[in-house]
Image 1 (cartoon, rainbow, N blue to C red):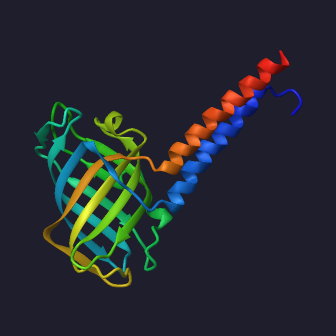
Image 2 (cartoon, rainbow, N blue to C red; image 1 turned 45 degrees about the vertical axis):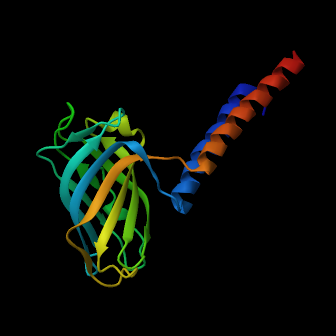
Length: 212
């Protein structure tokens, strides 16, 4: 491209690889796994109303594991996750907002709100009495937002009457859901894209030196 330096081309292609990879993973991710810390553990109730498509998780944060793996109590807080999911199990775009995830309380010097997030993607499993829902949110605020980074993940272990279908109401036993809120472990594909972009810069640099 006339008038565009090798470095500019490298930035453009690398940016496309990284951003494109994130978008791709958001649509196709199957493995949402949390790091050990930071982690906020909660007790909650899960309800789903098939008539309104509202998936709601409401409960109380109990503990926070910090970077030193020390367990701290969380006081005076609430855990709230709300989203519309249609009868096909597909999140409804119009329900995405900056407080799809909202966690409050006080712990280890952090105060309300602790973490806020806007829905990005999710998966779920139906294993009889041992179901789980796994969500990723784009972090939008909170005093702990710097600990969680760009994305915050929530894994909800669930004991209730979910059958794998989103055409009927379901809910947890009282206190039968245990959401863990933590940082997402990147999938290998995302890490590979970052490495590829690094290799691209190296190749472009070598070409420039050769021409010199």
